[in-house]
Image 1 (cartoon, rainbow, N blue to C red):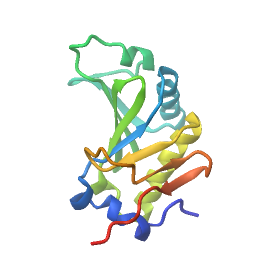
Image 2 (tube, one colour):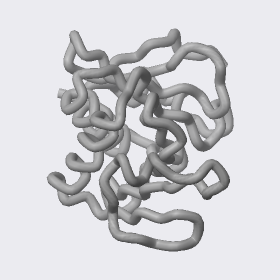
Image 3 (cartoon, rainbow, N blue to C red):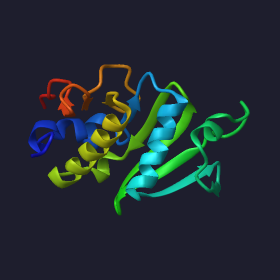
Length: 161
């Protein structure tokens, strides 16, 4: 059974309403949590590409990716959940795991299920919530993995158009 139904959440996945790149995050993280995510990517065999600036490099350990000079470009890790669904992790801080997904790639129940499965795998591995906020939002998250419920849940009331 699906964690979320498309009809219940499609307003939160509408790029015209929410911006096309919502912020997905795991708060209260650590270098160890980052490493767990990197290990998960490798274990699951998701296609990925790590880069620093324009330079593509082999996937390092989390500690190396997070310990860079202050003036260095922020590394990122592109992870393809499917051939056409991409998550981009940015190594801004060891205290929060931060990544983007493109809502234009997440239209319909099948793609929503891919996103929910990804959030669920990260949340289960870390034992932490994985929260999705509208692009650039300072407001509350709209959906996320709930550790106690062991599933992705809606965290906001649907928008009325």
